[in-house]
Length: 280
Image 1: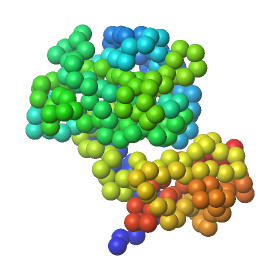
Image 2: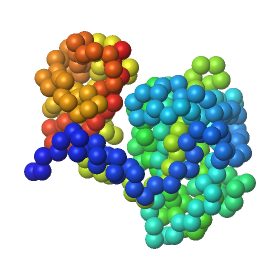
Image 3: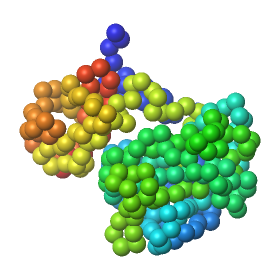
């Protein structure tokens, strides 16, 4: 088996994500692509509330729920992107919510002013609560019967941030007082980043709290078993190879100096994930 070093893994990560992508909106210049909204929703471009982890950009879009409708939505212009029925494309966005939310997108609007009719849910589930996580949707006409996007032109997306049906526990999670959602880095991709073998583990684990003071916890889903955890500095030097376990899922970093680190997590099958960690 080919040995994968941390630096080569990070290089592959950057190369993978830098290929075949179209930035729809990163909100660094304000709400440049924002269209109509409805159902009881308030959105605004704000300072990124958590400039750590996967998303360190300056700005993002804040989402508040002001009404009880399940279908509250925010329209976002994608500048009339041509997609043939023989192509498979994906939409990726960074998501930061206080709990698991039932997310959905509509891709089938016939123009910039319409909302579309069919809701498509993401390929992965939001699990890194109060942290940034990449969420990926396949661009197609609907979830039930469509296998591709057949309309020829993607005019817009309508984003439903809080439908409240298929999350666990079910129910709406946003409000207009303290429970806000954030999205950022909306991109159209030629490939599904979740299917990349070297990073498939990343969708099955969460690391928190982040920032951390003296310890962090790694939680897994789908019965994933972690076999090795090590910590590197941003230059690629290993600083903790035999990290002390406080309990089954908790790891001690009390001896580390404050700063940004990379946590390399390997499962029993050899799959590897890299998580950024800020040590206070």
